[in-house]
Length: 128
Ligand code: HEC
Image 1: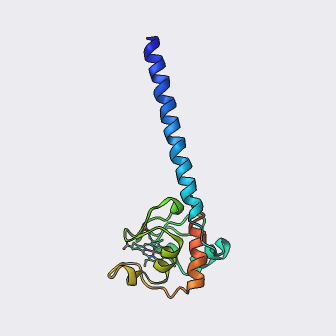
Image 2: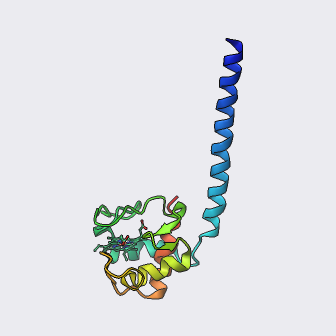
Image 3: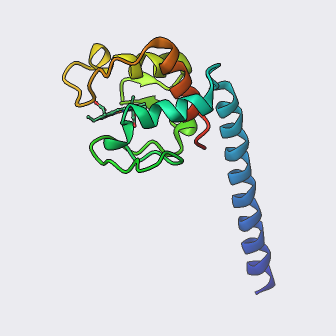
């Protein structure tokens, strides 16, 4: 009985340790994915461009669209549209012109400029 308790406690500690390890790795991944744009301005632009018509985006008013995938936890995602690895540079390219990366995608080219895409990316990387 006592042995079972010790085994159980050990398993719990191991699980906690593993989870803590994952968190540690994720936060280091997160800190490497920081765009040098302005998150505050990016959030406003995301609202103005109507990204929320197609995406659920935390912190953006009325962004509840379900055409595209929800963008919560963006800083922890590894891929963009299943096509590119999630880096600031790639995200900016995607936002500027999605069909150039994935012909036939349902996300249109909205005419976002490179500077605007940088700010939008900066906001998305604040989503943990
Ligand atoms: C007309 C609908 C529509 C609009 C408007 C739209 N998107 Fe998308 N978006 C999509 C769809 C659909 C996908 C999935 C693309 C794919 O996987 O081919 C997508 C994918 C994405 C992804 C990658 C998501 C993932 O899980 O990999 C990001 C990031 C993104 N959009 C950001 C934006 C931003 C920022 C805006 C505004 C400038 C925007 N989208 C506007 C439909 C839209």
